[in-house]
Length: 302
Image 1 (cartoon, rainbow, N blue to C red):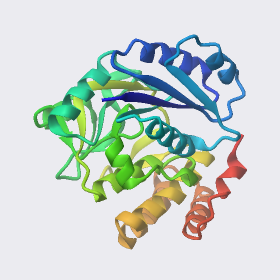
Image 2: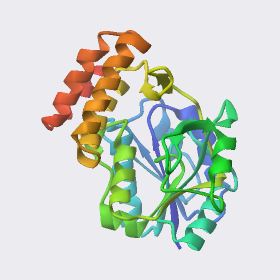
Image 3: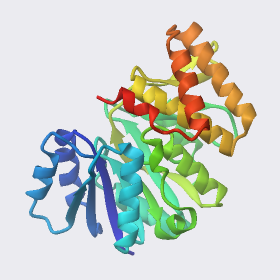
């Protein structure tokens, strides 16, 4: 099986300089493909100077966000003949045995879309991104809860894309590439839900670990602790989240879930973390997405 890594980067050279050497040490990795989203911090020059023939990179003409980067990178790896593609952002760091453990379970269980437990780098006893356990409404942050819920070392039908996930060529050929127009936030969820709709075998391999800096207020409790909201202080991220989440819910869950999401948004920015200006911003983003306009986020680019 030909395994290739795809890394998407933008102006985080120091993080990339930590990640690439780790990937160079991973056995069984045929190539490391780096998609540079038009970085201006010397990323392209540093990549050009690397002497490892397994590493190749492309610098895109403009910043296309994580969605555009993974769209380009995943397509690139498949065209290069990869049977399995290992996807990650530049700020993640896989454990030395992460890929080995994923490959063992991928082959043994026929997994088409599998990933590691994504741990908060500042506190590896906690998940970086909270997950909802299968068969219920419980959202967990603690790694111990994930380990307790695992069956034969797996959390079925749950994965955190695109953080160290392994995707098969066959699945990509069935469902296509990530939606590049999403720019950031929601492209990963859409790809997961598309894979689920296609009947893909999906799971988190609990023993495989992937560190990621804990950022933003993901999973902020609201409505007296009955649910959570993915708050971010970034207007760019929030705009993309409001737009893309509206589209994802409409396509995969239906209008009732869209209305519930809008209700949560209004509640959160009125009562939980009062920021009334976020409500019209959210509405503009949602309406733009429903109209097929994916240009509005550009006003928030820095």
